[in-house]
Length: 66
Image (cartoon, rainbow, N blue to C red; front, side, top):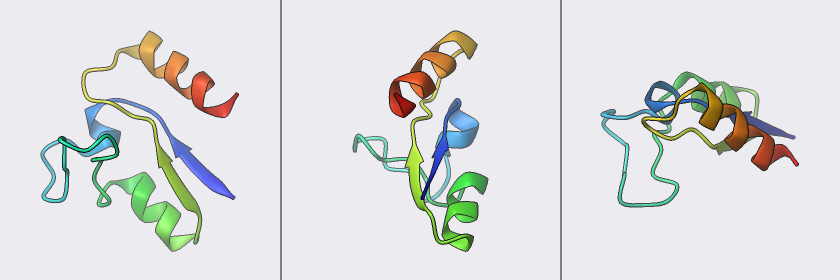
């Protein structure tokens, strides 16, 4: 089972110690959804991106679940 997290920089983990923006999957593993996925032993998929607005967040989540 997977945990899909969409959102903006808060969910992406911008400016956290383990963020690696040079990688495509450079999101932080210290955010709440990442920690929850680890705790529940789920695969974590982060489709959040810094700077995304509500319309882009919805579009990105729908793209990742369809």
